[in-house]
Every structure is written in C-alpha cells, then in structure tokens.
Image (cartoon, rainbow, N blue to C red; front, side, top):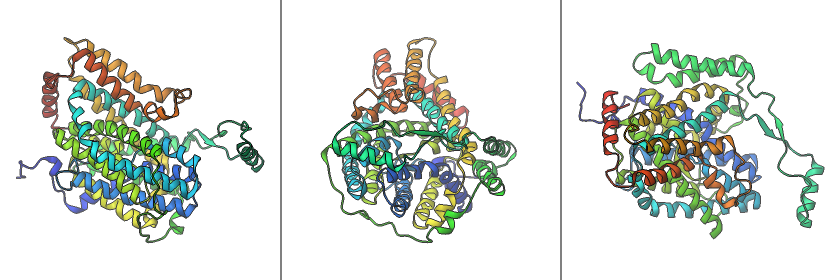
Length: 490
C-alpha cells in the first residue's frame, strides 16, 4: 500500500515514466519558449549565429529556473508545484521597442542590463506582491483562470492553423533606402507600418487534418489507454502527428543536420550589460505584470493539485520569477514566468507530481547544451502541436469554469457583475488588438494583456461589491474545497 501521507505534488515517480512525462511538458512549452528569442533577436538585427545563441541560452535558463521553481532552493525560492518556467511574452513589446531604437550588440547589452536590474528589484518586491493573495477569492480566481484559458486558446488555434494569417513583407532595397534618408533628414517616413502579406499555408486543409488527427489520437488514448499510457496521451499524440507529418514531407530535418552537437552557454556573451534608468523602469513594470499573471497561474495549479497556496509559498514563487529574470539577464536571455500552457497539461494528465517538471527542467538544460537535439524538437510543425493545444488550453478554461461553478450567485447576485465585466475586459486585447494605438506607449505592456485587465477588473469589482476582508467568501472557498475532494483533487 502506498504511503498516504505523501501529497500527490511530492510523489516520486519511476525514472522512465518521469522522463516521458517531463518530455511531454517540454514539447508543450517549446514553441513558446523559443518564440521570444527569435522575435527579439531579429528585432536587434543579430546574426543567425547570435540568434541561435539566444535560443540555446533561453532553453538552458528555462531548465535552471524550472528546477528552482519546482524543486525549491531554501525557503526563499521555489513554489514547489509542477511549474515549467519560460520567457514571458509580456516583455516582448518593450524589448522590441528597445531593439528598434538601438539595434545590434549595444541594444542587446541595454536590454540585458534592464532585465538584470528588474530581476533584482523583483526579488525584493515579491513579498509585497504576495500580500495581495487575500484579494483573490474564488469569484476572482475562477474568472482569471477562465480568461487565461480563453487567451491560450488563441495560441492553440494559431498553431493548428500553421502560423499567423499574415506575415511581414520584406520591403525592396529602394524603400529601405528611402526610409533611411527620411530618418536622417527628420522628415516623414515614406510608408507607415511594415506591410503584411497573406500566409499562403494558413489553414491549409491538409495541415488542419493533421491537427485534428492529433486531437483525435489524444482523445482515443485518453479514453482507452490505461495508467501511464493515458497520462502521456498528449506526448503520444504529438509523436504520432510528427510521424505522419514526416511521412507526408511536411517535417524536414535540415536544421538538425546543420546544428552543433555541443555548445556551452556562458554569461555575458554579448559583453557587459549597460544600465539605462528608463529601460529599467519599463522592465520593472513588466515584472509587476508578470507577478500578477503568475499569481493567477499559481492559483490555478493550487486548485488542480489540491495543495493550498499560502502567502509564504506565493512569495517564494514570485521571488523565483525575479531570480529567474536575473539569471536570464546574466546568461543573455529574457524575463521568466510560469508557463500557462503547462498548467493545462497538469489538468489533462492528472499527474500532479512536481518532480515531473524537475525532469522537464533537466531536459531543457540538455537541449540548451546540445543544439542538435533542440533543432530536432524545433523541427516539429506547429500544426502538430495545435491538436494538443486545443485540449490543453481548453482544460485551463474548464478549470476556471469549475471554480466559478462553486461561487454563490443566488444570494449574492453582484458576483455575476464581477464575472461578466471582468471577462469582457479580458477579451478587449483579443478582439481589438490595436485598441491602444492612441494611448501612451508606456501603457501598452499593461493594456495589451487580457489576463492583467481581467485581474485588475475582477479585484477592483470584488472590492467594490464584496469588500476585501480576510475571510470573505469563506463559504465559497469551503464549497470549492468540498468539490475538489469529491473529484479527487483534480
């Protein structure tokens, strides 16, 4: 008989199963992990070799910070939940703006300096941010988690479609020279934003068929598989989809052949960082956004795993976001946060052991040091991942809906207003992505995050309607706990 005193979060799993479950987490977050270095590297106009260095450093640091977060290092760092860490997309807009203002190595050093400073500041302000936990009763957390899931659905659908509907069109040399001349003369630019062209492979029926095939495979394995096989249904579905894509000539291995077998990740490979106060202030703002979004992820994991989130554990988790950002700046990469994609995977598999993410962290470190293996994973087409994304990201939204189902609407109709308005606020950036174009650029990191808008709206409306006492909605919390116990905690 198993030791019932061991919480499922702390369960030790045999190594072969641990490796497979960890690799499943890596596949889920890999595309998102490498997207940011690709975007920022191109904005900085770095060479292909330098962009490859950014990707290797990113994977290496993803692994290190994942180990710290899920395994825990002293009482100060690590939330000790099944968390995979990756580069936050909240920082992409500010970093691209910095890169376009100062491209090349000078811009890279300025970005890394701002990231290092923001990481240090983040470590110190994490305890202040964690004190907001009492403002997150079930009506707030359920709404936030539901919007996180809906926001992620856009990513999963985008993967299934095979990439963006429109791609940036490269202007001809004459246009580029005209822009350079206009900038030098201080006159109006000859054209506005970068022109876009339709992606000819967007929503191609054969790619969509493979995405649906992957989704069907995952559903069949989840229903008819037993034990461990059912737990790795997402991994098996992705592998089957990859085999089909390769057989149809849609998955190539040219990058694998040209990649190096081994490459060290060293600190300050782009030179010593520079510290600009304005850039640092911008990245600190990004850290605050990250803290708020991470709080939502941690609350979702708390509900999925059945482990209570305390102020002390939340502080340790947020402090690790700051430490990860500091490590990222030192090793030539970017700010880190818990990856919401992997929260859905915990819900799909029902495997709550944090050591699965420890295994995933080790795999990421290996991928960072062995570019050829990383290139093999990168070769997987996005539409293969799309089939898996639909079920995983939907699971996050379903978790939020389950929490909201335990909220008292009968005797407190004001909770309906909190949910309705907050979800609407979170949809603004999704349905109107250009809604900030007439607002100050410094506000864009705040206003372009649907998760952040939902969080602010839900917290403020809950304070307005229900107050902010420490024991508010205790009956709802008890109801949610009872529902979790009835469901087995997941």
